[in-house]
Image (cartoon, rainbow, N blue to C red; front, side, top):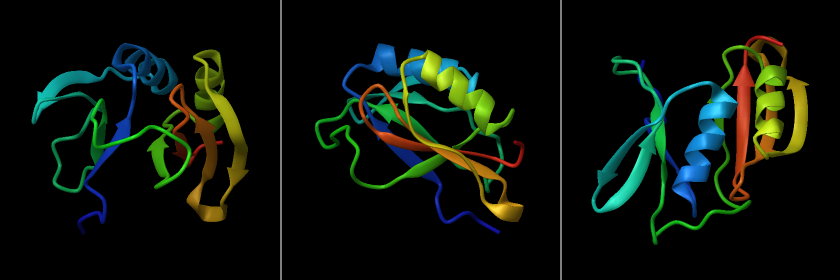
Length: 124
């Protein structure tokens, strides 16, 4: 089954700081690209048609901030571990790790640009 979401963009004012923040928080390497004249830093993606990925982007059409859509990023080694790295990298914890029954655990942070970003894991 295909996912309802296949791409997301997280706006940033400072690409270098945002890349460092997300790489430290998620323990991944982002790939820098330019699409349509806009700088992007892409999150890793599996070569699978059901995979979902996205990028950080510096674009006049998007404004970083706390309002709008809330996306949840995978925290494969657990939400609390990811939260600790996010706080160390400068994030503000908006909602602590919260159990969501059989669907795992979630938390919400504000990144360096003030974007609200959710974290999700099946692990505690």
